Image (cartoon, rainbow, N blue to C red; front, side, top):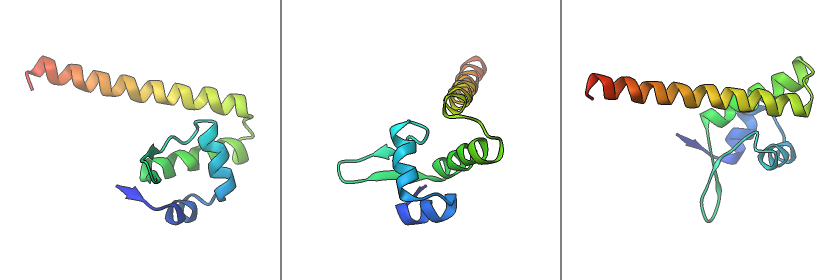
Length: 91
């Protein structure tokens, strides 16, 4: 479900400028249309993760890049395994 920018900023607790930087770094990867950026609850969760890694755990930018890349790989593998499981079951 898409949420608007103001709601995203309120829920995630980050500033607009921070979001812009995180999008440039591909830490947050919202869908884009011709007229706007579309953010979701997944983007909010990812913002919480980035903020926790940075602020609470003191992870530097390179570490955040690595952590997010590994998490994305895990989720990709989970989707692939679910797809394979469905094919094996004949779904």
